[in-house]
Image (tube, rainbow, N blue to C red; front, top):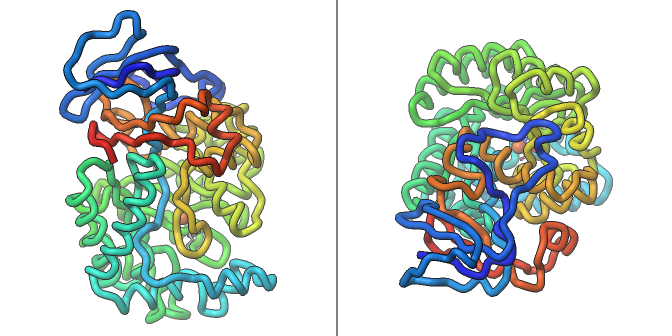
Length: 407
Ligand code: NIG
Ligand code: FE
């Protein structure tokens, strides 16, 4: 199959590129007036229209730009019920921490999750997955962390595994986030809950979840607790991707980097020190502007982090409490509008660097021969990255293909 008359084939990289660091994020390689060929879900060639091969199955992009599908490296799309009541509390001025302290927040989602069946949980998560696919997401990381009991966490993992089976056109990675909050049954016994995570939950996640996560922040888990969970997970071969520095300068960045984290995520509250540590590491600095937008928090210093040499990714954090949107087009726009990233940097942050933050850069995140034929064709009136990013709510997407299949 071949796509012809592509106005600008955007995001071409050598297949060996694993991430873009610092000022490497300033460049986006393109071919104007291009074709793109794929077979069995994989890109097999591209070039300029004047050298277009003759092929039987042709789709005319009518001059629209084509970009790789988005790589959303941080989500919590498996949840039950909704938290719209807390939304109203927030409007009335309650903070995220106050809502959590009053039994809302993550524990509210945990109660809801533990009261529904696998099927019910699967149905709503599948709906969210289809919705983000239509908005151009082709690779996604999904966390547990609303079970907070052994059975609840396993239920979430089963749902993620079922999504992976039923949506083969998506790349799906599973992350175990048992230490998202202290489960209700362990209220006031945080140390015992951490031992429960390590002794009872982790062994059952081993070989099934790809990564491990801990909410290392003020009012949640300490650096020492995080370290002990990450070390235990390492013995099962699970790499960390952790929540750090959202609510406070928590030490989360350092403990993540010290434990070889694939990414440390949130980073609304990082300073010079954390940026230095990240720039000197192979850990991806993942920022979640949708959470800042929804909670009215500061935005992570993405522009400075890129200037200082970090590998920066942006992700949606799609979850019921702090970021009820999985729109990666909107995330890319927030990256530019609120974080002052250039369109090129924001684009690289939601494609190749998002792939890097999931260990998927060999398969996703760029237009490269041998990678997934997962891409977005835009309408021809939206001819450039600056256009699609600035028109932040316009339905500029004409078509989404994931592993060669039109969604
Ligand atoms: O990434 N910060 C911690 N966890 C989620 C929020 C979870 C929730 O409020 O349900 C986040 O923002
Ligand atoms: Fe999160």
